[in-house]
Image (cartoon, rainbow, N blue to C red; front, top):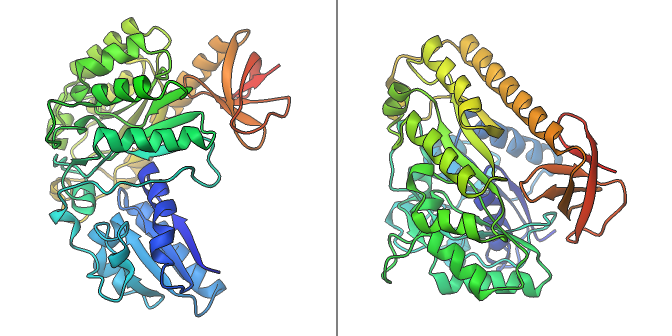
Length: 408
């Protein structure tokens, strides 16, 4: 069997699962590694459910738990009889973390340098994800991820470029830069002032064969001027930005301890759209944050139109252990679910309007498995003619099904 992995959560976890296989299997033992997420209570519930299922289906299997869940919900996983061992986020990418001398969760808060996660490709993915930053120095009141990932730390520019060159040499056409707090990139590096925008331009300059460069979620208020210039001038930087907005009401944003206001979010989207008229925005939004009134929720709902958001990730608020928000007056569960449904419907309507506007256009699509692909703005496209995954093709858009475009 070797090492099998089951991954929950973010793109960073996906890449790390691929990278840790070698370390986890270095001693020749068969293991099932569950790489957990702790961003919501549901993520933890799903991971524990999966662990119990694995134990039923493969009795006797050695199940090892790692990831943010292992760091912030250590007792919950350690108490499971199905779990043989916990490996902390600070150890999982290091050979010694998988040896008998491994110390388990807890060391990630002491991390001062980002582990370089070198993967030429991720199984089942056409796009290659390159982690360039890990950890977070902010303390949003709803979030446990800083305690699961440790302080913010960046991968040196030269190491990132080397990883991108490896991906391109293996036939990769698109790279996605990922991180926990991506726009914090470079602040901890000893070189002259370095930022995410600096890194983007350095990659595109050093690797001219790279067809597409894409960013994962960013904090719009931290986006540097060099990043906006790159968005305007670099055609190979894809016109899709996913924003960590979370709410549209200033008082709720303050209680979340976010670093932007509603006006900041709207202004950023207006600026980015002026610089790159074809840019499309995604966003994370939380429904039912503690103390949220109907009027405050309505401002989040209105933000979908005011920022021109297209791809929404909606999270019903769930309290996380030891966070300040968990001690605030809660919103009723039924209200949270209802508000999340309304946000999702607003997102679905915004997506339909975007899809309508693409009909009749020719788009460049990166083909994926299963007869689908992604346009430059990350819109999914169903391809009628079978295309080899990883190839770029120009297609005419004939229709859509409400969720994706359909090529002629």
